Image (cartoon, rainbow, N blue to C red; front, side, top):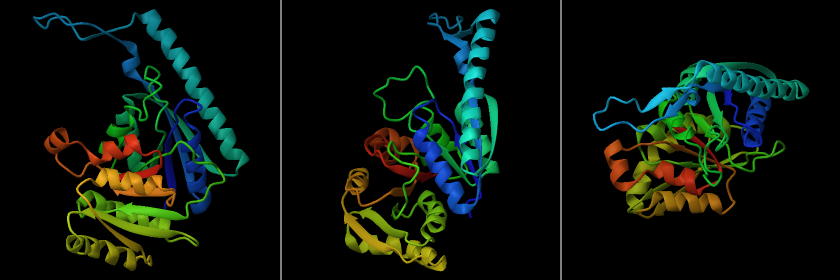
Length: 285
């Protein structure tokens, strides 16, 4: 059961979908939401160009006065966000707690994830210096990679009254995708929810073999999935097209299943889907 939800609050209005998803999960499960706002310590460093001999540091700290002023401003913004979130939870009769933490955001969130069942993050809104055209914040990938819990990357249009009826689970036989089946079973075992299990493979025969253990796992949890075997060499494109069709409310998949060297050479399916698919995605590393 998803009893405890960790939501990393972004700046408004980017936080809306993530908050709505946290509310939805808490109401469905009778769960508790813990909201964290992170004071990013890297904001207190000024980039410098190093000298050829390497003696000049790449970053230097702000002056004490500047640092104190910046910290006070960031603390005030965090308190405001957390206070507003607590009021929103109270108005919905949702149990919640709030916390401000100082550190490197991805590390803080990943460490805190151990105490919860799932992490909810926004797509953008954590890095104030980010390009507004960026579709994914630089925080998201390291949180997914480091978290021991599934990470829900909230889509841009999830409304509070929305329902998750149709769930797409992308399964490729990797350990990461196998671990993602547990949260898929949790969410699919609800009245009115349908789950489709898809794999993207070079041949249909191999697809049947890959899906067999996933089907068996879901069956043991009382979930009877539909099956889709897509023959293609481009899993990211196929999955993104399926989600873009509008037939699914939520995508669940393993994250970063290949070695870092392979990701550098051929690209990451996870990164491509996050960048080109605006849906709600739960990723398990």
